[in-house]
Length: 458
Image 1: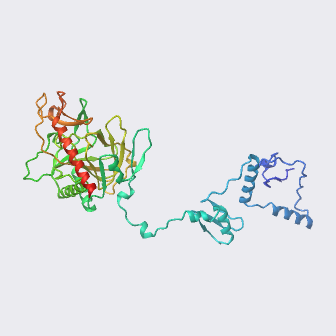
Image 2: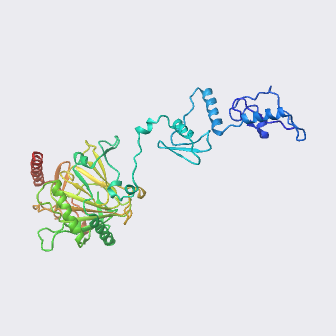
Image 3: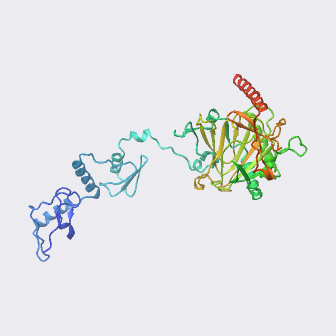
């Protein structure tokens, strides 16, 4: 004879399966089964039940019909009593079935969207879920029209913010572009060229980059391949022979013809430099191009050689294509200042004052998936660094007979043996302090301070 199903006295769960009938406790709330309760006898189908018994059985079965929400709520109350914890409220943004109506109310950001037949009782359910109506007034939802949402935006609006820190142990602090000159000798400007000119220049340089060279550098006596391709562009006019390209740049970088778009970009950048820094007659004479194919192409921490540029030079880097982070850190051991600025398409970074003497810059490696790609060239980034070559005095020669180079270290200037050409792996170790460069740097510092005072008076 099969055992009749039994219902729990606590949660009213009806145990109907053969396995559940054998339990001594409830399968849901773990309440103990009342063995003293007399079991109901199963009536056969050929016996007719009395009207009173049928009505009582109907009423008992009707009282046992609970909705899933009521059962869940009762289980939460029983568990909260057992562990002495209040039941968890319904979190805003979840779906809840209304026990009074056969509809589903979805609460999202303080708004209710009701499917099928909506009644007035659904509004009371939504207020129970969200709490007071004042919460929706404190956090209003900003509405935008379809035209505003579909309006095209510039690439700079999607760029992550710049950041800095004073120590590697500190957390990064987000800064704006206007705060960068107060932290380091650099100025960043977005959308410096007309968009059509920037896109045309990018397409022209990407087509020419197949002829660019991946040269080699000598670091600590060892030859290393450059993790990017490079080229050089001479921006002087044909009749201007007063300045010639430095042999150090021509050694690894082939010289390419200058396009009209590149000359237009050089003119526009020179005007921006004059607006930011009122130094007289800054015009770029040549340009060094670097192509970063993927996120693995990079340039490590370094300071540029200032042999053809002189002390405290101005170097402007134009970024085209994908967005990469440009890092700048202080070279001294006492200061841990580190500034990280993402440079999107059609933006420039102006390094001025002692950026090459007391600071180092780099474009670190990164994952290609983390790059903000360009719509045309994808992961490719092309950097154009514009420089102005100056007339420098004869600084002498090293022990091996080569013209010496000029380099800054720890705030001082030195002449050193600069190997290039076929014998660039050999060096005589010449290293001598340069008095002329230190005097020229002091003269430029006084000139910059006078100009800053004039700007403050205006």
